Structure formats: C-alpha cells, structure tokens
Image (cartoon, rainbow, N blue to C red; front, side, top):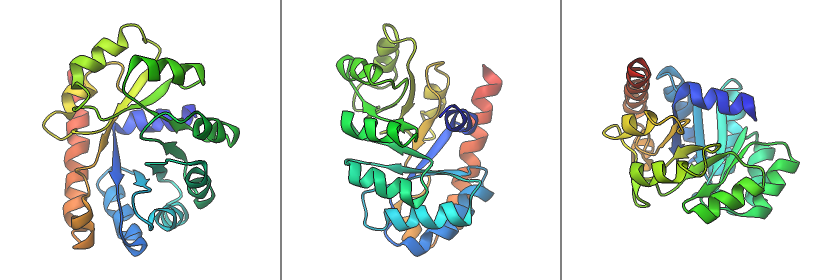
Length: 214
C-alpha cells in the first residue's frame, strides 16, 4: 500500500473518470500518460468500467489504475481481477474495506464525518477519500477534522477544480486531490484526447507550483 500511496502523493492529482465505451480506454490512458499523469481512477458508474480497467492495466502496466465508486464486494472483486492497483469507495463499507485488505489491495474509503473517520481508523485505514469535499465544508471542515485525526491523510474529491486544487494541496494532510474535470464523459465520447492531455499538463504544472511554494 505504501508504494501506491507514495506514487499518488508524487503525482498530486488522481484523474477520476467515468467511461462509457471501453474502446476509449487506450487513447484516454495515452493522453493522461503523455500529459504527465500516469494514474487513473475508473469509476463503476458505467458498465464499461471493468473492461476499461483491464485494458489500461494490460496496455499500460506502469500506470496506476484504480477502481472507483466501488459500492460492493462484487465490484471490488471485478476491479481487482481486471488489474486495479487500488480501490476507492464513496462511503465507508466495512465489508468492502475488509475484502480489499484480505486481497492486499489498498483501499481508500470515502468519509465525511468524525464518526466515519474513527470507524475507518478502527478498520486500519489511514488514507481516506474526503467526499464530497466542497459540499461537506471544504478546506475549513477538512482542517477541523485533521485536529483530532492527525494520523489521517486525505484525497479530497467533489468540487475540486484548477481554481481551488492548490489550496487543498497546500494542506499537509492532503496527499492528492481527485480530479473529475480532467476528462469529462462528453469529452471522451467526442474523442477530445488532445484536450484531456492538455488538462493533465496544466494540472501537473499546478501541482509543481504548489510544491515549490511550500
């Protein structure tokens, strides 16, 4: 798990993608990799997720590939069997967390409240998805949570954009941010992979600027 979290920390941004057609997985992975973000979280919001994970993990073995919006053990199993390196859940499901731990796959459960954080800690999780970040109170709320939970590190998602990602990344408790803006479904469907590559490049520049400022 440490190797995965270190890579995510190094990148600073995890592209979070819903993909309608698995055939788009290859040019998507190429665009993100060329843009400097060899990482993607494919969400189980569409039927194409499992096959997209399989394609990317086979064709781009050096790329970090995660299964996102995982709601059940069945989905977690599909993602892992397809080659996912990590699992992300929108909420805290002890059974899904336990399954991933048994499979020795990093899992980042979604949390929003102190109760959920404490429950996740009791399950052995120290890296968590803070979701939905902006709707839940954004940076001030995240800072408040970090007071009593100093050992927890977060990957915020929800309402993150180039306009505010720097503020999140400047927080020492934030490993990286989740980025849904990097590749929208309609952009993928339209075949605008050059635009996705450009957004990835811009995100990398923003991450580097934040880190130079620390």
